[in-house]
Length: 119
Image 1 (cartoon, rainbow, N blue to C red):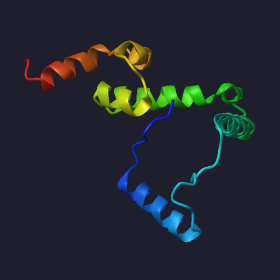
Image 2: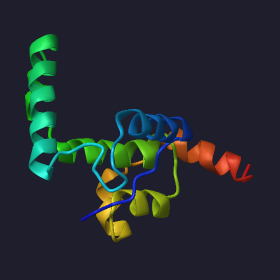
Image 3: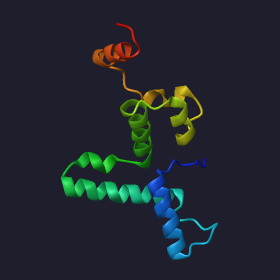
Image 4: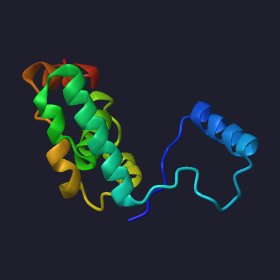
């Protein structure tokens, strides 16, 4: 399903400059790829990464893996509000994003309680 993407201001500015410089029509796509085209680009990139690094695990990377890592990075690494991640990523329920959450370590639990003022 279509999703609205968050763009940092700098990236948005770059896109606007690109559209003006290339005379892209207002309703023309900036990146003209179908879903299968995006999957093919990810697959080719993964193949090149495997060849360049010798790490065969790259050959198994998919666009779904990138979406999953995106969610995990925001939820776990950046501790972003799950509702924001759900909105940007197109997930409809907390249950849908729950698999992307790592179980917190005891240190993370202790730090969270300390930061919340429970000492």
